Length: 500
Image (cartoon, rainbow, N blue to C red; front, side):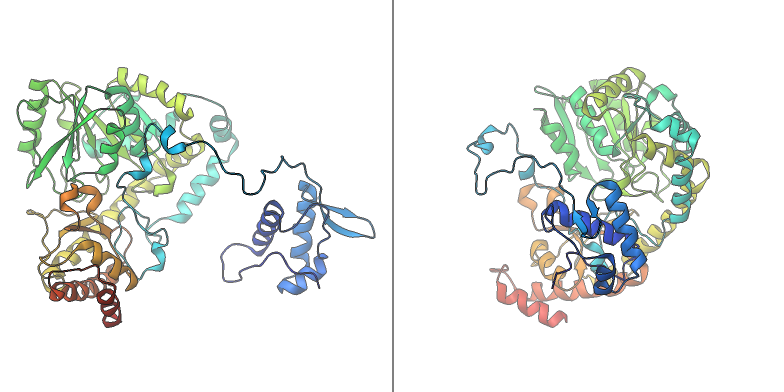
């Protein structure tokens, strides 16, 4: 009896017809169904899968129209003969020593890592992901539908190479930037694939061998990596209770700062320190990149460093992805026009413009007022979750220390108590359903295992206390085990059993 090469999941929100269509196309491309092979009739397939025959028939008709299948009268339905590139001989190995050929090895850097199945964890203390209960999906769907209208389609479907959507530029200029205390002309705004691309463009334009770039320590590792890959020298900037410090005579060309919410400590830089740094930049003639990763959803109320800039030394990187979704990949750069012009043409050499359909969808979402309404909702949710953590921290995570002062935000930075290694705690906690972020990528190697970050953008408020309680119990077990080989597999197994 002929087997069924596909399956459908009735519990999925994806329509059965779409599941079946994709499954058959995948089976053809993967070789499970070969060219010329006869396949089950639509009636037989429907019976085996337990679906309506008209669903199977509709999928077959569509795949015949696309050229994947062909129907032969009185013989049945067959996989169409399709042109195939010459197959690579099985077992062929490359003779190229790729390790030696690579000028750099980005994969070997200590990246921020987190499991991709975070939704499977009951206590996901992770940062920067979308809370589906807060996101206005219907409003985004309506904005996407408007983007497919004829007037918008004529704009975004063209190859504009270097242009950004003027509607999105105007929405950022008139609705977002004033919230940050910034006023800019359209010529001073560039749309980027998230703030991350802003770092890359600036690194290529402003860094390189012989340049000294000040990077906060602890700090956001990706920005440091991007600038170091140009050959620039990374200069650690210490962080205290008032944020980053820049000493006289540091001989910097550039400083990368997160004054609105220091990454990862979330310390908010007070006005006095901001004025000191701006004065130091003017005196020592260096530029500042302000990474305002938390600015739009911050509930600290402090305006941006860029808002104090009077001589064009501060380059501002903002992001829409922290509000919309990381996968949307939309950010923006605010800088003097000469720098924006060069960044625009450099962006063209990388990928031309940022996808214009996404730009227009975001512009409509902003223009209809959904974006600012979502910001208010996120601020309230993050504040509620942050206060819940801080309230229960002494009781549920005794010995864990927060920065002083401990400012609010979408995450809480914690230093582990004596006898608790965050690396071991992380592995044991994962098995117990508690997901948190390692602090190692943010700190120097000699501080590995000392810190962790509790992200609050995804976890529901009611899950915070039980998640913290479970984490605290595991940490107490580790501390009680005392010094020694804390990587011991038997200890880890014992902790898992006791955690339930």
